[in-house]
Image (cartoon, rainbow over all chains, first blue to last red; front, side, top):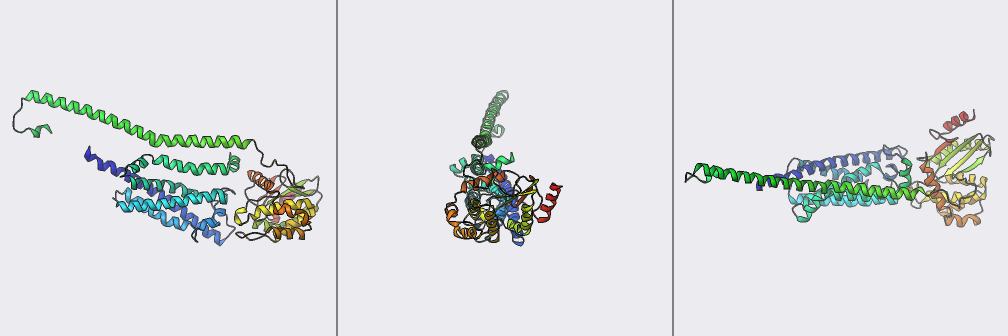
Length: 195
Length: 265
């Protein structure tokens, strides 16, 4: 019984690492595309972007807003840096590397900051800008589980962490729903036309 | 475990064997029980970890969609009383022939730079068509570019156009041209209400009559309603041009001309 414990502990970290690596890779790809599209839009303001599907589903209209450059430069540049780190740490965990506690804690803190940023961006997108940018939504979609997984992983030695770990899917789903329901309500007139 | 523990006394063989067997059997039963318990526990956990979230998603999305569908189906967003003069129930202003053979409809946003280009390149052609007894030209202003100005210029300009509609068709057309000639840049503060009124005056409107309408955004509800309704249809951006209800590919004078000629023949 006792000698089984390490392997039981190690498996979730590895599987989580794999999930984090996948999330990091997807987020990196989305941030990269958003950055490249931003350049295209600068070269040619009339350029029709790959993700301009309709007035509601459109990156172009979201990209040119003040909210898309909160810190004075395009937000996706932050994403390229951050998701590269997620991908790297994810690969290390998947490879069975035992990361020090403080690294995991730092990882979780960074991911939480990302989550806060995404919450603010999605609010701005839905209520202030009034459009949804598909590539941005890809970033929201991966940031939510990345934050929950890293926090749960870092906090696992604590009883609270174990509860969070057990209910991590529920937490992720609840956060997803918070965004989805708001987008459903706000743009209902548009969704209705798609049916 | 048992053999190495008792190296000293040679035990009565049969007895010891039986006892070991019994112990092994008991141990196996216990392990099976533990195994079973653990399996149950895992099943319960899986149900909690995967089943509960799925259930939550299904319930919440279903309830939301249901509520929205029930609430949304009853109302027609365009069905409001204070529709401006000259404007038909589809949100369009008609010029030219009353009983036309061909109808051209231009969907536009006063903040949209391509609409400005369109007005500059195809405006003369549309003026010719308005004079043609076989052709009616309709303008359908919408406001979906509020986000590119800091003052919701798109909506305010559309509202001002609705106000000016009360001043007669020629004044409206002149104001329409003024709005595009003085279109503010995207990302700026747009024109102020008093600048809009100056343009209206230049177009021949009586600003004493319309200033309240422009400043209070009297047609704000109508602007919102006509925009929503228009975007529910085939329109996904501006300018969009329809000839006899068929969307024209492109928005240059030549495409319009080709479509109109085809419709006339």
